[in-house]
Length: 416
Image 1 (cartoon, one colour):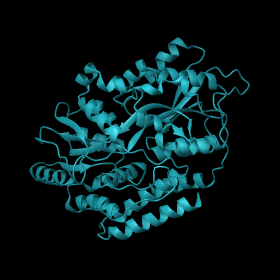
Image 2 (tube, one colour; image 1 turned 30 degrees about the horizontal axis):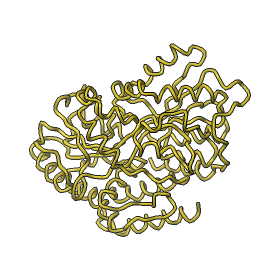
Image 3 (cartoon, rainbow, N blue to C red; image 1 turned 120 degrees about the vertical axis):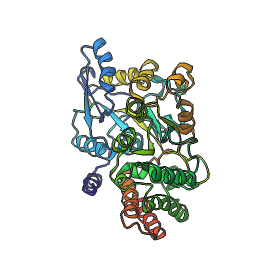
Image 4 (tube, one colour; image 1 turned 90 degrees about the horizontal axis):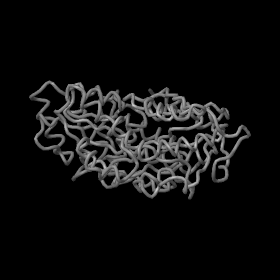
């Protein structure tokens, strides 16, 4: 996996920097209308194409073709960057991980949009901020995300609220049953950065200042976060096989009945209801050192490529695809968190998706990742540093790793 990080880093280092365009959709000379391509991460729940078919049936001259990229966010980014650096018009609408807004805007790869065209005041406020950079709207929120704890309610009477409770319950149940205790996304990629950031935030710390210009990592809190993971691995209630887990692997492990607890995004809920643990699991907020954790804010924003020749169609598609009716389907057919606030208070949806109030609370209390044009470099350093701590024989000298990580992050910030 580290070779993938090398590839992404190489792309970053060769990236040019261009100024962003004027606000609003431009017309590159082809009328700005016609068939377009939506490029986004792999649809692991197979919900997306039926939603696109609804648009295609009513827009026969402006059909949308789905182009799926790999599941991991850093791999998606690498392929998008290669396309955009080549100034290719193959991609029209980009499904961007929320952390990419600043970088893509800073490089002139996406165009700013008019705020008044979208009902942003009806979206969850933290979600809207992920699409804003330097005062301009560069994308439109499509899905949000916050980490949740999936647990086997047939094995656990009360879900844990703290790390100590999680450890105790995981150890007890793994002794009684042939089952793993807890897993998150522990492969060395963006998912590991997110898991670590959540642990740091839950311990009362942060990694960077909100504007991404200063390293504010407290080494003691970073050590606390690292020790949580390494203790679980040493003691066995975090299975070592989870060191190879991304979102999909951890989802499958839980729904196949091989884990008591799993950290994952809300999209894992729907498939789990149709699996061997259907009716046997619950969802709650992630635990932290002293109570509920502070999740990292995730999600996907829809942006328009600066090199698209059909930007008018792209804009109309984004307006449709982020509209209220389609947002309802995003939840009911894909199990992805919508961005419209009112859907989280809908009694019918809550009956079908009982975790919605918990999810809304998690999103509203979540921390966005820093709006830094160099975010991907920062994430690479964090993931690789944390991976060293999680690699057997699990060093107990996590304080030195935390200090080294802080120094590397500071060097990136100084040179940006």
